[in-house]
Image (cartoon, rainbow, N blue to C red; front, side, top):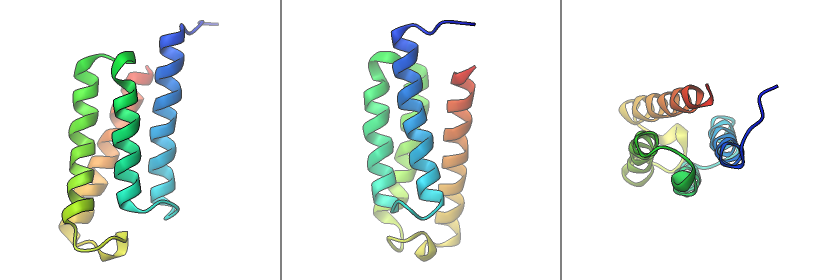
Length: 104
């Protein structure tokens, strides 16, 4: 069994929190503005534990989510335009892909 060093444990714990936040949003348990905040906060927490290029990818995707959250046509997912839905869905899918790649 491969042992995780403390840095990997922190990275995994934070990454799991990001996955959980996305899952809660997709179940309508978390409003979009709160998802954006959760992603921003958790990604900032990852900074000392993860490579900069990975953080940059996550931040770019979080900024897309934040843009939809702040400029979107509504606060609920059902009030978003088709373009906003596509942007949000694509961003969240890519974010989960980046997390999976990092999981190794």
